[in-house]
Length: 212
Image 1 (cartoon, rainbow, N blue to C red):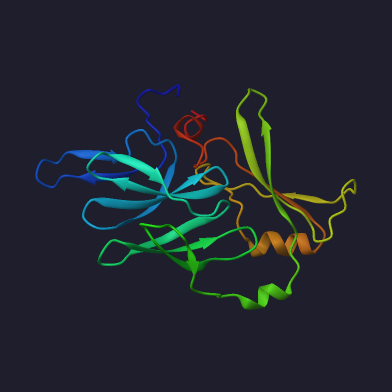
Image 2: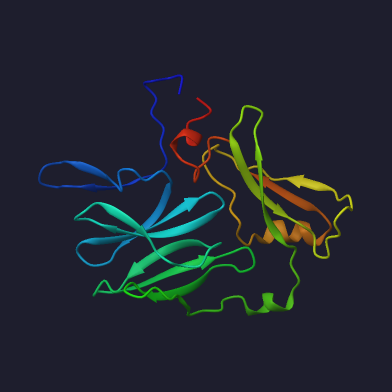
């Protein structure tokens, strides 16, 4: 960063000691965009984080200040975390490239997510364009990524009109999730390219502040 007085960082969950006023980021060495959390008992916090174009869930132990990744399926994005009174069961919303958000539940002792809802059953009758992750290097060497949505029945080697969908901010992130607008464009014969320009979330503090 060329402006030392300007400190930019990914969103962080912080614990505040109301007696001393001391504030601690959790976990202190985590380099990703934390987006939501839920207490699971008195000494455990479960939080979600954007990591590139997908998401992950982590369990944070308040005592030893360590985060452990939960063994939930790859390729999903998580939100609306909530725990039961005992801190042993976690409920959350998850979505991926083919499915809008649904409610899932899992034991935290043995992580095995089970879907509770099917909020959009009519979508099973539709054919969607395949969604892929695109990666490349910028002109000055930054590893970049984005989302590529292809038309249904896409034929390799065929030229298609392409729409570039860039998120604003630049803080933010295009993720590999079901997007009805992207799918509408793909259904009408367009390739949709949604890159993640530098300055966005989910790629670490250096990437987040790379524009300054």
